[in-house]
Amino acid sequence: MSKSLKLISWNVNGIRAVLRKKTFLELIEQEDPDILCLQETKAEQGQAEIDLPQYEEYWNSAQKKGYAGTAIFTKQKPISVLFDLPGAEQEELTDRYGNTLTEGRVVTVEFESFYVVNVYTPNAKQDLSRKLFRYMRWDPAFLEHVKKLEKKKPVILCGDLNVAHKEIDLARPKDNMNNAGFTPEEREGIDLMIKKGFVDTFRHLHPTDIGAYTWWSNFGGARARNVGWRIDYVFTSKSFSNNLTQAFILPEVMGSDHAPVGIIFNT
Image (cartoon, rainbow, N blue to C red; front, side, top):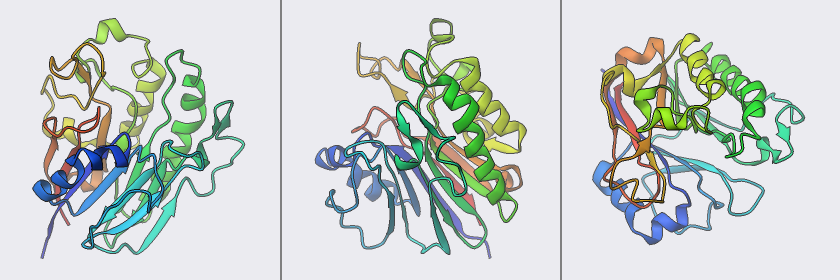
């Protein structure tokens, strides 16, 4: 008998800040996700006062205090949990900004019929000084990780990928061509993910929706005017896409400069 599950992914831009604003617990009360994936937690487990006995919690915090970090909350205890990119070479994933394998950027949990991979992708930097590192090293290493998992069972991967894929995915594509988050190299990372068999769930179910954004600048009233970018995603293995029933963005949820995104699917 199939079971319907809801997964929500949210870059909280600091878990302690959204807790103070009350928006984190409101989201859980209103949406009641079975699996909740967070990015940019900027905290270690225990630094944030969270009392959610219905969830198992798996945190991957950065060694650097108050930086990056991911976490997964799940009602069902997983079979296994992996942190970072197992098997990846530290030298390959280190640049002048640091070692991305110590920044708490990936948590993977395994369930009976699928994996969930939660990722906070390094951004290219405003001056594009991390663009080639991302293009040549991070994106290929992350794709290798999820493809390796997929040999065993389908994968749901979600998180802040720090790139708008197509022109429909940001309000001002012409103004931002070749800017961080919309360079050909960053966009190619999504192209390759799709070429390798992953499905952008939101575009799969809403191929022509415009104005569907997940991040807004804090300047110039961008959010109120919906001058945004869609840089937060949920992808699934192609074999799992038929299990999808909904894919959504929750722009009305405040507390972060990102909106939560999610899917409802059958197992």
